[in-house]
Image 1: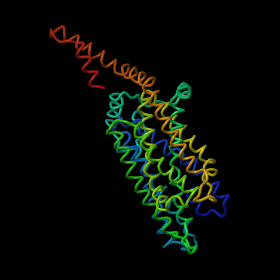
Image 2: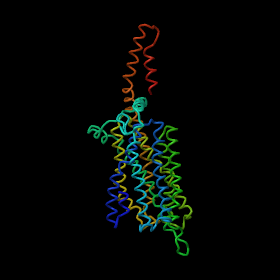
Image 3: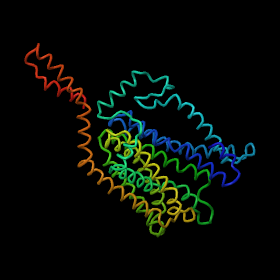
Image 4: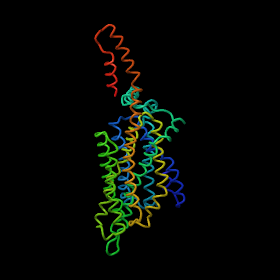
Length: 397
């Protein structure tokens, strides 16, 4: 689909191809997030999700660099415009990685990918043992009971709204290039060339990569998700406030502050890995619900973003958006409120369910240990079978 866009002859063809492209790639990000939840423990999950999520920024940085190189070297080569060469190069990269994916992705711990030649049966056994040790249920096929259970719980709605608000709140960075393109010198000439407009946001992408890793590392190290989500929301409020003033009263705010605001927005682009890690922590006993909630959150964002961004961030208003930064500010405020409420719900309602599931998960092992120890007591007096069982349970938690 990406390669076909390079041969499109009009806007309608591009729209159709983009629709099919979106359908094909829609499972990539939520699918990987779901796989991570099945493989990694609470002290590992955010780092893995963060690394994968940061690849999006790395891709944008590479794309910007490729655009600069293509414009300078391939524009007009073979009778093709530079933008057509971009889609051809992207298509080649996509096909190569898709091929390797058939052999690199291990699939689920209890249903491993048979084409993953590097993945042994022992690896699968170790993975399942880790799930039990960290009080996580093994992956299951989707069922109608799981669907009903998911949509009658609090979590699906809070996580979906939280994710959507985070993405919409940070969306201002996407218009950095339009901001640069709109700027003009006193003599009326453009401040930045096309190559510079493509190159400058690469610095923002670098900031995003670093801070996605920082937030993810801190989350796993400090064993917290919600506090760092709130921290990013507070940071996200800063550029929203500055740019809300700048767009309505440009003379009241220095242009350098507007530049800084766009770069600051990249600091708060690490919420998605933390939200999905938190989801895994909230309901480790329900893999069906986790998978559905990830899908609902992503689908909800695309359903809202498809029309809202055109209304809120219209290109004709760039860079003086009437409602863009104000709406982003409202989204970040909503993130803070929703995060705190979900934290309360977790403590009052979700945590007891996790503890109950953990006790049921380990009860057969503990009972077996107590039974074995009891039989040994018949030969070895003085050994407390109850304490032995508790020690076994403690080693599994």
